[in-house]
Image: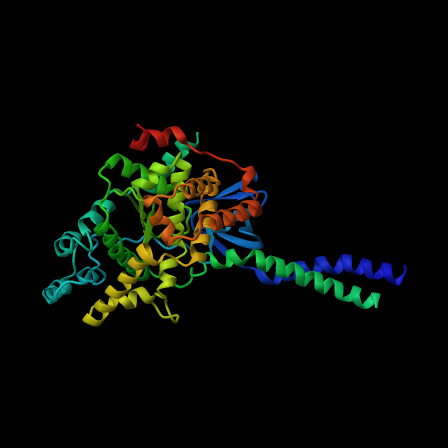
Length: 167
Length: 279
């Protein structure tokens, strides 16, 4: 084997090893967690890839590689690609709400721009109807905010509606 | 000489590969970049409370369009999209504003608004989903939070939101009001940073694909809006990057992800049934 061929052969071996080593060092043992209600693992890093598995919210997936906006993961004995949008580095947080749940300290801010007469109200916190009375109609409308919050639909209801549309 | 170049070859190739990956990851690195800064229930509640106050200001300027069925439709479409946004701890709320101007708004905590004028420009449900997804992306990527620097500065419990709201004294109230004012100014006057708008377009396009909608829907909508130059469309143009730039950015993503080959659902019939301007 000439020196030239030996060096070329060496390159063929070392380049992939270097690249693989970089990847392996970055992701060894790293976990990502499903943030959406479900996430599809696909056979290739593309939306038209074949479905490998569907994993539920909160599932811990071992990160194997990254390509663009796609993460290659393993889940049990299965491997697949999941959209970066659907996973995060920490387990998903529980659903939070401050709609009339008595979180008084946080609702004190509804007194903003109100006069000193609201300081007493601040001490007890404000519910939406209190906020409505104290709204400056030309600036803020808390009654409309309450109306808007009443439009909320459940995730299940929305997902069924989406599925119906896709049929 | 040949040997020396060849010896350096693998390193150079590896560095080039790494560099290309890094360049391709620039958008990836920005999205979800603040995922670690808001991690407690109190932080989330504080973000929602802040968002409520900004949302009330939006509703002080525009009335909710008086059509319960239409508002329910918007919430069904938007909630399904938001389920894939990575902000499962939030309940997203959507409302149609009774305004002929062409625009949409969002506040931290998940309050999303779309004007009736914007709806009138749309051809199908995928385009509606596209505009809602753009606004969801502003929330999921915490663009206002970043722009106003309302973030934790250390690893202690409680983000900037909690500290801003929690104390409850008059100084805190003034500071809180000022930050709400700044958020409102971003929505109505200053606009987001240009990069935030382009990222929101890209996240929206990915959200559409994830949900099963036509990923080119946002592009179609923006192209149509660009062609209209009247008083109603100027509201959007005043606070957003030039449409040509947004279209180029989306085109680049579509090419990178191969999305042009995955034309998915547009859902025109159901959209026409729900949006009254077509009756």
